[in-house]
Image (tube, rainbow, N blue to C red; front, side, top):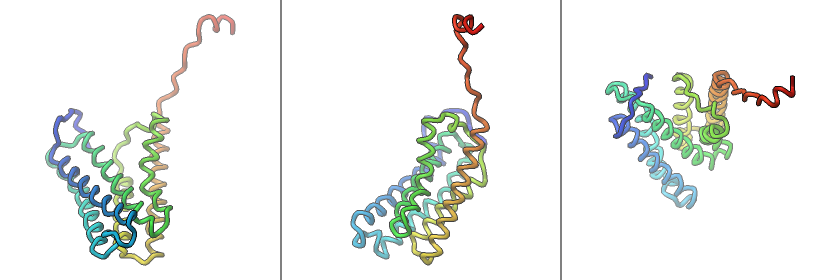
Length: 205
C-alpha cells in the first residue's frame, strides 16, 4: 500500500470507519470488563450479553477490511491512518484475548500482549522502529487472531478444539513477529564509531 507523505489535519473517510471500530472495541472492552468483575451475573456472561459482545466484535472485524478499502478508493491512505488502524486492531485483540483467557487459560493473554511487548522493546532498541513493507502473511495472521478469539468467545467450538485453534494462532503470531524482528535486525543501521581523541591516538602509536 502506498502511503501519502502529506500530513492531514482532519480525519479522512477511512479514519472515520476506523474510529467507529474503536468505539465498538471500547464497547467490547466494557462488556468483557463487566464479565471479569461481576462473574456469572455480568451481562457478558449471560446468553444475550455474550451475543452482544460477539456481535460487536464481529462488526469491528468486518470494518477492519472496510477502512482499508475506503482509504484506497478515496486515495486517502496515510501513515496516520495505517497506525490508527493497527492500534485499534491490537486493542481489540488484547481485549478478546483477556476475555477468552478466563475460560481457556491465561496463556491466551499472550496473543494480545505480543504487540505491546514489541512497543516496549522499540523504546530500548530503535532499530525495531524501522518500517517494513506490507506483508500479506502478517495480515492473514492478524485476521486469524480476531476470528479465532471471537469464535471462542461465542462458545462456537468445543473446549479442546478452541484451545488448539488459539494455540495455532499463538504459534503463527510468534513466527510472524519472529520473522519481522529478524528482517528488522538485518536492516538495522551499522553502529556509529566514535572518533578516537588525538591524545589517545598518539599514545597508541
